[in-house]
Image (tube, rainbow, N blue to C red):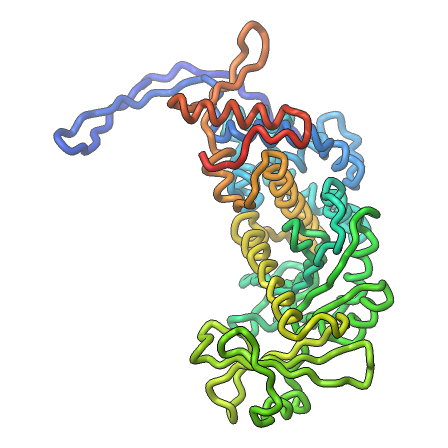
Length: 463
């Protein structure tokens, strides 16, 4: 339900209060009073709102939301979703903190929505989602890739799974599973990212006691088939959790090349114990490789040995009987023309997906965004990921060569104080920007945003 209208300002007995503060030379008092001006701490979100209009994101949302309100007093579901996404960009990581933006007098107008919904309205909104409607909502991620250019060698698709801790442990799907902190109540999502574009292509939420490989093959198939027709996947990468035969066979059925970490089974460990004649030195100090023939001619097993003394930050596992070394095994169907060292180097790029996961968890709120309904929680995450993808695309639109994280966007762009007013009957947003240099940067950035695509009026967000 919509909130009651504010009856307007009332006469107050004490209009001002004086507070003393410390400065270097004195203790002056500052007068505290109040204003009815429509002020916002997030005036820079007007850039975001205009970009969403360019991307026709409101129409995309309307097509994938399952809500069909019948009450004349109900919020437009699209406004509720856009208000929630705006809350994420402002730093909210709980529904109660999204609702707190109602106290910002102008943020709803800057976001282009009727109002920011209350916590109870948001909870009811996400309680409507089902498995089917979440699958439809997840289509936003593939839609975000529409504007990406075609790459001759194709894009690299990275797969990963991680644990989302929920210590209270009462929400649907929260179950005790393995985490870095031991056995804890958690969810265990699957995620797929396009490495070169730094976009998230797919996301599934799963119960915390789910094995990493469960559903991975179907997740991969769905991800690849949902991508725009002009985008080709040139390589699939994943850690040992995705090295299962079912995932490898799915890759081959889709005509995809892959590199997965192979588990260090006893058979693979026996290869690590060979004398030095079995290892081929490389141009990388302290790193040696050996390649093993497999029964399946289309697949290769590559074992990597790294000397800790030369490479203290090396990944991989240690073996008790071979101190001073770390070992890693990779299985791939790349042709033999791609040498073992190149395979290892191409796999190492997968680590960048860890940065995306960290940013989604800590800055887009996924670590804490959780409701009672399992599919409501997945919907929360889908919209947060949609916000992430749009932030990436916004930076591409502004000519940003290197992607910066959401915290940086908040400080430089979104978190700009402003006054909302009407000048000559027209809505006006006055951004609080001091100094000619900063104002020129904003003018250039706004010019870039409103210019036709591919016009690079702004080189970066380094303001």
